[in-house]
Image (tube, rainbow, N blue to C red):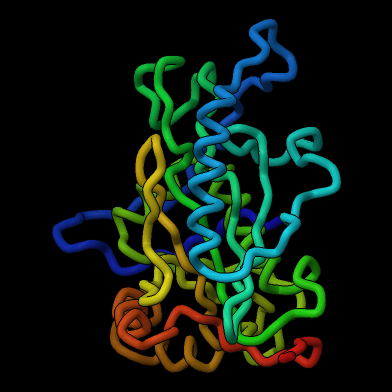
Length: 271
């Protein structure tokens, strides 16, 4: 898993500076090592899970089994999701495949002192980090779990969990760009250094930007790749690539399916 390489994009109007340095990783105590078990609010967890599944079902045909790590990353020093549960859902739409995180919006452990949304402490029930992230791609994949599409969503969602304040950061900047190593992408989508450019927050006409839950709204954030040639062309314009990010995202948002990743790959199945 890569740590974020958040690029310094154009600043919001009226802002004097843009601090996009990730905050230190949250390190809440594990509920498996405390005397207060059970600590998690199972009723709230169930309600949030149902709200997410209702949202997913409205997007297309949801694969019956979620993608999940064979060994929980928290036991290997990995990022801690709000309720420790982490998974990703595969959704088949008429001409596309969509992968979305499933758990970033779980309610926080009510005893978690680092709960960034729960000023009331253990009395607060909030929708976790307040978001889920997804990427949509043309066609079908023979093995989604080993595709660049899943790698993209997996990396960003894990780093969002580690950062802890991703949604406020996105709200501040409107849209962000990241660079990361992705396995399986054709060369035309990678920089000379082998990194892919990702826009975070491109508007999608046919995917709601949020959904309601019993514990507050959850934002749904798209991840869209930028071809290497397109990035080079933008870098040659006034303000460079960073100065064009918001305008590019807005243009893509006005195009039907503009958020969709149209990356041809030999291993895709278009059946």
